[in-house]
Image (cartoon, rainbow, N blue to C red; front, side):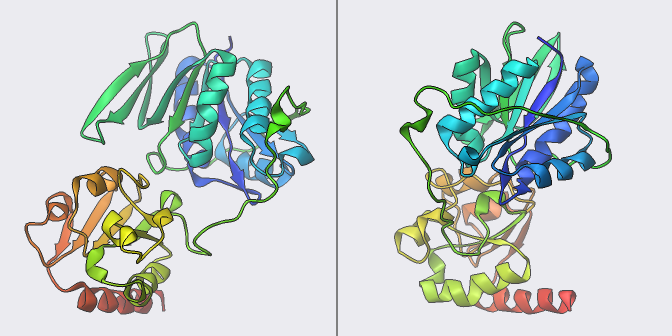
Length: 327
């Protein structure tokens, strides 16, 4: 086993996923401690554009696995491709972004390479010759320390927006590996991937989220009040479970324990009381702004800033101010 750190550089539409870029930052820090190199692996039909973008992130080596069969994400085929990269490089640590793809891929790869796995980690340290990570448990109310065995490859998915994307570096060497489908890989074939929610960003991938609750009262109010602010801020639109259950927004935008866990740099909660399950999904936000007339609402207690006024007056006014700043 080498001391190298392998990072799965997840790409979508020929662009590196922000979470994958962010995972390179802890990989570089770990490589300094292990004495190994940071190697990024890109999988897809076309990988040249993504590989070129990785040159500026400070990785030492880029492995590309290109094949028409890898045009769309497939659990079985991508698993086989990533396993082949791991078997070729024999790294000590493998990092993925804790995206939907990363969560789906990591455990399947771990089983194939007989590795140890920790998911959704927020801290990574090299201690006593092995990897130790910190990850949230009990809906973020506590944190657990996980120490990997030294005789197995350590695989970890890194929570998005936990680390800043690295910069600096060039001249990474490149190596191309052939793709050979494994037995049973063709059991499921992905013919098309359709993005739900139109052109609006997904809440799990956004730096800024503007969320609305049941107080919005209708889908029309979401479109007239929440969406304009989100557009002005280049943000994603989120919603509470109550708002989604009422049909104001699709469940693909639901933030919470039964929805999606988010960690944006800025979370603006409009008319959301802050039920336990909702707080569990957004507690990791860097800055939380609550617009709520109820000063005793649970969301107010965790917010960094509170605006105790009517959202139907505050949000449109805030939207206009943001537009003036951009102008």
